[in-house]
Image 1: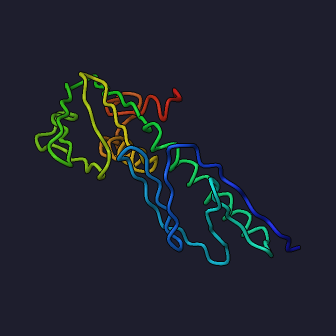
Image 2 (image 1 turned 45 degrees about the vertical axis):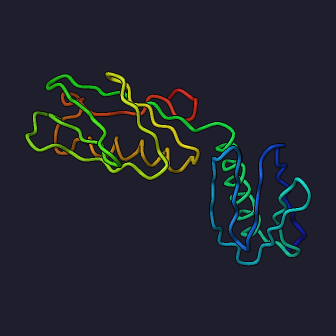
Length: 180
């Protein structure tokens, strides 16, 4: 059954939003989040201090897309107000691991005693700070911060070894303010 569905997103004061077709730009104090959405049959418009997403004849699929786009826009607004922060911990029992950041790449040395260092690509827009055994990643875009944290975790994943013995690696301890 098709029915009229529209979702309104309130824009807080001090935040500028621009809608150019399917592209949404959110700005505040020099911080900027930008994203292009696949709207298909949906209408996306700005009226006053609200963004309205919807369709006159919506089915279940349109409803899912409306809610997904609304969540992305809310995360974009939250990201320009305060940064998304992930914390990771460097854990080792066999060989001491050293991590250093050079440009848009992090180098992990002496992981499991390997001679060649492992390299982690840091997405543009993510800030990485290392304080002894704690790595802090923050970004105004939730997906950028999450991808940077996932890159660190994936590059130190251990395969073909007993996980009960080889517990070395870099692991996410909290994401976006929520401990795991």
